[in-house]
Image 1 (tube, rainbow, N blue to C red):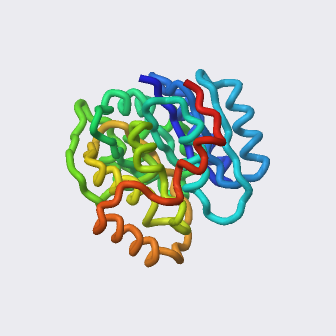
Image 2: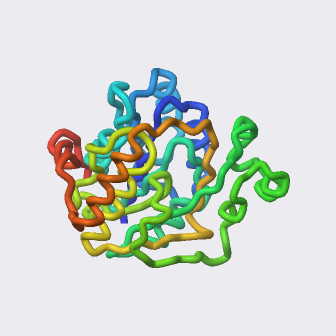
Image 3: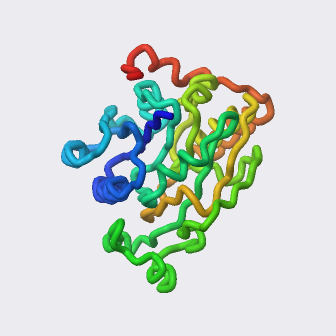
Length: 267
């Protein structure tokens, strides 16, 4: 099974550097890495170029001009270019556990998509968090990590199998690429941050007949906390998502198919 890891980022080079550090510690590497960059400045490009030389897999940088929050568009471009049969999505402020990719590989199954969980590195301590060196137990006991139980890789995963809307998070999820193509990827009609596009994709896959593995204790990520961004379009996005759930539609109109002919798909 060929795996493509897709990392979304926007002007957070310090956080992205820690994500790359976490990636360098993986026991199993993805077959390729795609950085979905929603308009970052040159410092992010320089960081990616630096890490490209250290990576154990090809690293592709997809960039678009900064014209507002258009994460769905750049994610669709990355999906269109990805050659993997299986797509793992990670945000550029979420550091993966060393067995993150290996866990997602083990959890993959036809007819399912996977939702992993996250704990939180509290904002004042983010500069001191060093993947592979930070003693997580100590940080949990000292209150430096929020939701500490979600920071622990368990001897066996706790897997809830459902079609629930609760807990859908784009920062740690995985899908079969042909399932994402079948529902036309992310809906680019969603505006702004917060509630919307990630839940929409998951719900349209439910409507397609897929189910979710909601996983605790495996495929862990450590979210590097930052100030909460405004969400002015929350109500409109919520209404759009409610309509997807009500209508049980599977495909969005403004989605992946706009990019499939433009991006190079490597088999």
